[in-house]
Length: 288
Image 1 (tube, rainbow, N blue to C red):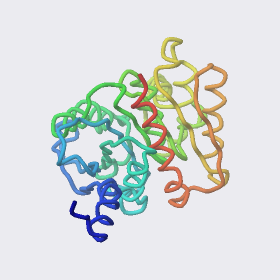
Image 2 (cartoon, helix red, strand yellow):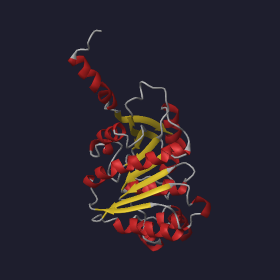
Image 3 (cartoon, rainbow, N blue to C red):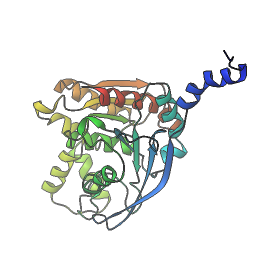
Image 4 (cartoon, helix red, strand yellow):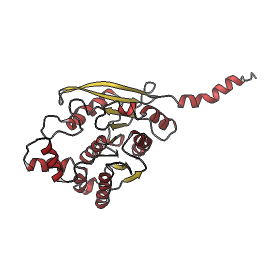
């Protein structure tokens, strides 16, 4: 019998590890045209390592940036590609597609503007999600769709999952802005922007775009619709709002994870949170 050479044997032994450590791909300057926002909208996307070589469809995580950021922030500052590759290769996360839309160009924010002339939320649900699910091999079911984001994107995570629980299996807001502390604070903010709106309009908008208000008014049959993980640093100036969201969920008996960890409102904290995001949403993707 012909013996296998030591060199070939060594190669065969390391080949499985080499293949499993292959990297996913990121594209950080993709564009779709929005009729709702009347402009081209940029997005970034992470595709897992076996995307081109397989015919399978993947779960999707929508990952939102913070105020002043753009679609490439999680790639440029959050080490997304390296962290996602490592989590998937180690088996801590299931292979997934990660979509990062820009919510700064033109106007800033993930909500429909109270003036009705910049409807970003409508764009996200009526144009972005259908576009992604048509262009990429995405599993277009609730169980395979999750959302996360930091700061302003954490606020978007709260709003989108609270307002559209039928669409997401898991939500992981990080260092989230939960909205004005109360209705009077909301009125003062709009007054500072010199917007003259009827109190009834402001009140309705506040109730629909404030995480605490939405939690307090959640119907009983939606309490278990989304798996929740709230994550914030102990030195973060938004810590109190996240704590109040946690308390509101406790009072409403909404199952959720809540963690205050060592850290502030910065990329050092958010990079540390990202592996936990990927692991948490993967558990929701795998749930039966």
